[in-house]
Image (cartoon, rainbow, N blue to C red; front, side, top):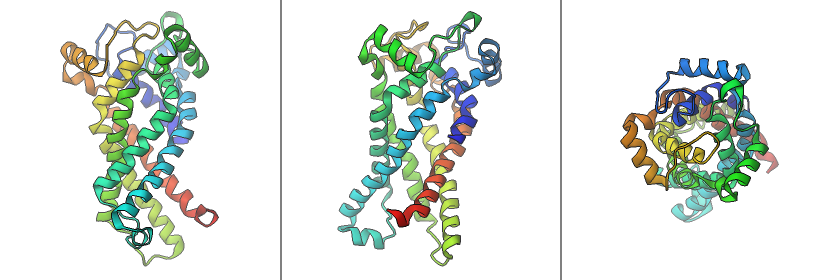
Length: 294
């Protein structure tokens, strides 16, 4: 929660870069500083945290599903790959990169499918700048869900779900797969004391998680831009319409070129690395300290 709240201003600027719904001429590219000024001018300082409530509400179930289901999928794949749970345990729960990728990808798809309406609500709140006089298109999570369902139908709550699910597989797969590779390249030091071992494990997960998040964020960013554009179509103030994923890709590329898919990518890296590092580090710490209770 702390990490998400602290980095929300960067996330707001990133999403406005992606969607182009920042009040300037259609397709105009604004610098992060220009977007920052536009947010302050139209919505005030609190506008930097627009969508943070929806994000925090989504994070609890989403991340718990991601990490718990990743452990479940890794356990199933580990038992299948090594032949038994005992051998998997003897191998320090290590898996080949391909299986770490698969487990992470499946966990990402599971979490995305379960929490998608909240992700759409966050996208619409964060990805649109308030109109003249500070008039906002959407006024909160519940309002966004209700207005979207009433004006566009219940199915609209799942606009962009296809690229989200397809993107969750490589994103979480690359993230967890990168962590898996680094854990094999830099194995645990088994000679540490219990306290030192915990600290060492958490530090390793912080570093590996940050590297995994940055790598996944760069490689899957174009798909994230497409899903944000699909989420906003049909919403208040948005005139662009796409018949599907590839139609969105084709029209966006024809109108703006390849660069359009990477707007806000640098900010995303700055935001993603510490965010993911904290997620992996916190999860490892809690798992170490609660191991005796479960």
